[in-house]
Length: 68
Image (cartoon, rainbow, N blue to C red):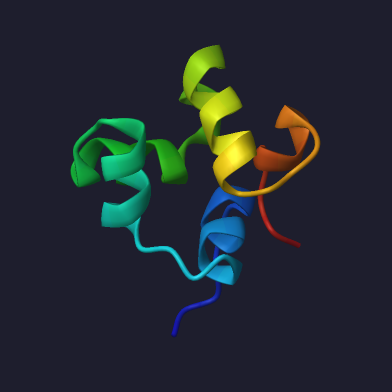
């Protein structure tokens, strides 16, 4: 398995969720979610808040950036 590049991808994987599962929960296509996962700076506030809850993080900032 490839090392996650973004924090969102990392958080999704440690929560044992597929891109499809997250996309379905957020009401979007898997392809669109995949683009957001690669470019989290494109997240709308509403989607960021839903992801924050789904991925069990305390702050929206925890979703942004690359994994070091």
